[in-house]
Amino acid sequence: MSEKKVLTTESGAPVADNQNSQTAGPGGPILLQDAHLIEKLARFDRERIPERVVHAKGSGAFGCFEVTADATRWTKAAFLAPKGKRTEVFARFSTVAGERGSADTVRDPRGFALKFYTEEGNYDLVGNNTPIFFIRDPLKFPDFIHSQKRDPYTNVQEPDNAWDFFSHSPEATHQFTWLFGDRGIPASYRHMDGFGSHTFQWVNAKGEAFWVKYHFKTNQGIKCLTSAEAARIAGTDPDYCQRDLMKAIEKGDYPSWTLKMQIMPAADAAAYRFNPFDLTKVWPYSDYPLIEVGRLVLDRNPDNYFADVEQAAFNPANYVPGIGPSPDKMLQGRLFAYADTQRYRLGVNHTMLPVNSPHAAKAANYGRDGSMRFDGNGGRAKNYEPNSYGGPAQTNEPLYKPLEIHGAAGSQGIERHREDNDFVQAGNLYRLMKEEEKQRLVANIADGLSKVSKPEVIQRSISYFANADKDYGARLAKAVKDRQK
Image (tube, rainbow, N blue to C red; front, top):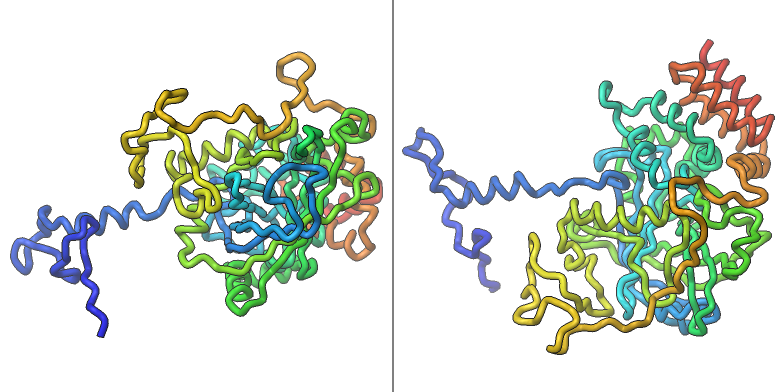
């Protein structure tokens, strides 16, 4: 017979009574000396950490990445070679704008974040289920998110705000065309592709640099919901995608994705027809075909959602040798913002939490102290560098190739290439759609745009879609007018 477990306080003292508070007599007030009650209430008051400003509603799972084609021609990253190499991964999927209690089936981009526990340290790839984004400069990001969040007065999401911001941001036309199209609401996290979205740098052992884009192609096939289907599910099962992912893994139907890369020699960038570092643009496959590199499989649910999913902290600045950033402005902004928000949300020692700490490597640095330091805090070891006591020292080997910089420092727009404008790729995407897809796209946009109160915002917005394609703009103008009758 197993020994009965004893309930204790957080200091380890046994709890005599967990049903009745200490009071001054049976009918008297509660006593301040009831340390167990105060500890229990105080912990309860603090057991919710601040939710993420964006990507608050999410699901996660552990798995493995396996190399299916040696990538040493392009990168010296150890986890990408040789063929057959396997690396533990944690993945988190999410919606973007809503709070933790929002529905999984809203029309919103989906976060697609991966943490590779490599022997050279953790590598974080923090992307979305879209290859592009709404804006290209991080200075606009807080304003963009504010336009998507609850209005300060009405405390609900307002079409006026979302479309007003768009009407001043023509570069978002491509992403809006994607978002309001058929792929705007994935049927599940298993049935969507994932993208690194940004351009990144790979460097091989010879020091040769390449610009790359990550594409994780779902092996379950693309499945999406219509607006009506999504609304119905949101009303009956707002945690639909969380439940779907968890149950699939529980029954052994492990979701998987094939990693395919677009790879551009660094020398090609300057003369490429689009700015390769513009997050509102894609690289057409005809220019840079997809090259298979590996396979991602998710096969283990977290035992505790809070410990692993809610406390998971991803940082696009977490690189390993052979991988680095690009001049993509949005990426450059995220290199600061992600780690900074995690320090606020989880504390300065969040990298020591099990889900965030290296699994196949060991962290060795001079970080000390801070809230919730729960290890030996470095013990007697010196907490400065360099030192004469055998502490960890620098390698003098950069993780990636330094970025070449030119031009004057100052506030300025993105560098334009010969075919760059804010509408060309949105128009190309529209013209690729079948007639039924175009009809649904226009209807989805018109449903929201027709609710906007300022006519000039509506006209400005329609003009962007018309610049992408005349038929696109004409259909949308008619659909909005019809809904306003």
